[in-house]
Image (tube, rainbow, N blue to C red; front, side):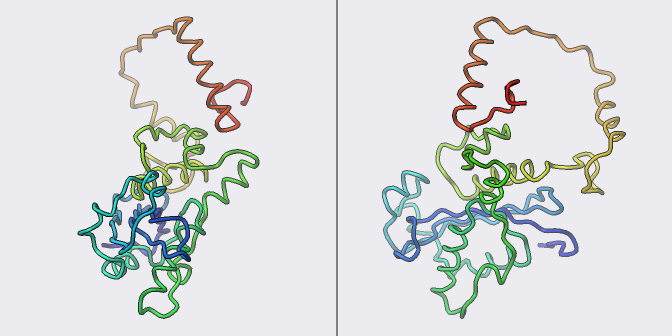
Length: 244
């Protein structure tokens, strides 16, 4: 795979584990990575399930749904580590609550015959949780809360999953740090200038006028209740006139 090292390469990463603390012997059981070049998704990804050779905590299974039976025939970390290193090396890692994932990866490295290899020797790390806490102080900044705040649909996320969460985090990262620029202009990663909107307008010049359907009183009331619920959960609702 050509990683285009002359361009800014980002890897959004998430892991699932057997428990909360690697110092208590807990291990990584899933790694999911999504690649971006100059803030655009490339379609390249790294995803693997890993046999941890230990029992998964019941509380962890409740979060991600991965069982020991499912992992019985999966490779060990030492069997996938070279591919993992090749994928992330030289990139900027985007991780939500980076100390957790980095701590687990470093622990896995420490169990191998690789000396004192650590994540920050391979790549830089950007913690979206730390960034969100500075950007939205005093508010909830979990991945679910950020999805609500930025209008990202994560309704398909019944359980945590490393690849799914990495895909969602990629959307959150792009919006939280300035949005996805130049969707129509593949040659530039700079914000669009006002004239560039003409390209978008030209797409709809020949369309027929859209039919307008007015909301009923009941639908408007339900809408207001939904906005109140969003504000209660996340502290702010970007669709509410009171929060504009």
